[in-house]
Length: 252
Image (cartoon, rainbow, N blue to C red; front, top):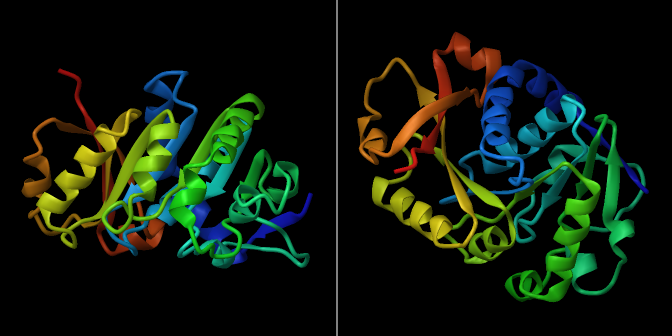
């Protein structure tokens, strides 16, 4: 099993933002023991879903929970800038296309308790691969081996992959950058995830400048209540008065 090492800058970032991700992790745990496989998406690229996914996985592993991170954004993976390896390794697209066994694709990391399945080479048919029986088999095996599985999905506003993945997951989260995406597009993404068949846990409002009181439009979803905070830039963000909030849909 190849060893992936978290790059130094990401180690520092994880330490700086630990409390924020711990808050989100705790609220996921409080959502129910059956919420083991979590799909994370965004409306567009660059909103912070991959950063959220990786650091949330690190948070679960940090408290002794066996955690698997799956990079399912095979079209535009950013994992190569997060983990490094001196040896070649296979990924999700290799497994789903039948070119690798599952055990070949699971990589250990230097983060205790955290394993990773990288995205693999960009496939010609990523959506079709996610719809085959191999992906369902992967998640069945992952549920039996791990306490939590965090899946970084493609942006839901660009391709349908996130809905397909969320349908196979137990729950989903949406990450959105404050002030960047129009509210109606966020609302549409929320609706899609809610209709996927898995439990929609809520929205992580990312890159919030708390010195500007202009985020009432997000609050107008009405049914979301703050359940934790998340810092895209950690302590540096605090120095800039920026952090993010996670919002959860209240039942009823």
